[in-house]
Length: 368
Image (cartoon, rainbow, N blue to C red; front, side):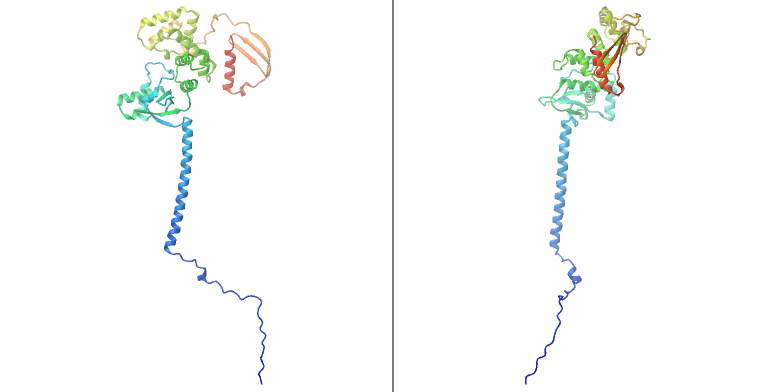
């Protein structure tokens, strides 16, 4: 008799069996061999060096562009051989005479060096440079080289002005530096204006235009004094040994005296020629005498000379008053001896001084 099979019900859970937990050993990183570590470290170092080299190249490119920009703007100081610096392009604004202060400049440069480089312009054929600013500094270096023979003084720091030579601009650069430093006498400024007017490569047609161009930043009164000294040089240029030593008031007074009495010019020329070599004091004494000044006169306290044709003690003329229409409204004008007054509803103190000076100078220059 066959036995019966027994059937057992087995409950199988719906959820899958839990996976075995990850052991600490499974979490541990896979160990690399020494060769793999070396390769990884070498690759990282190569990438770092590559990034550094790229950064250096970019910085060098930026510096190179900046250098080129500065050089093209004339802001890079070069060491220029003295024999390559010429003074032929511009007629210097200095008189060729003994410079009493040059020795002080030589001593200063020898002791502490050159604090301000000269300025030059590259010649068209690139064979040397033409001097624009720094005639005394260049002279001091030449003297030091002659005295010492040291190669230290054979080259001079210089800023090189780029581009084509604009003669008018170069003359202005030459003059402006000394005018700003108050280093030029009125006679030297007049001398520079005469040469500017005589140079065919400049736009100035006469002395008045030359003074207006070279000294356009100066007030009208100063430009008037420069024109007076130019007239003085025209009359006495061949006999004066120390024109740069003539004070402003003496020069202006002497010019007025010569214009009122033309014979004075001839007398001064004759007397100075007969004197021969002389001191500054001796030459100025002659000029003061013909200007009607004594040795004790304070030149700075002298009144402004009267206009040509005026008579001392004649008294002021009757004033003239009139109204006129302008773009800014009605203006009341009063003209009298030595005075011109314009009243207008405008705050003139708010106008830029340089612009105001140019406008006033244009007005005065346009008067007959």
